[in-house]
Length: 75
Image (cartoon, rainbow, N blue to C red):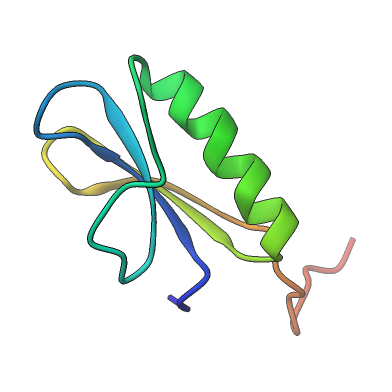
């Protein structure tokens, strides 16, 4: 996980937050997880970073990389 990674996490006040790794505050709060994922994906693509989507219990549900992968799969 690098400092540019984006995380979609549950917000303690309700809804879902998009937060950069290491940040204390969310960059934005959304009503639905789908809307938060959409914004997180935009930010991760823009920054060439990774996107982590968490479940409401905090565990990681999904991870996507938009960075330059030094070992891309063959195919």
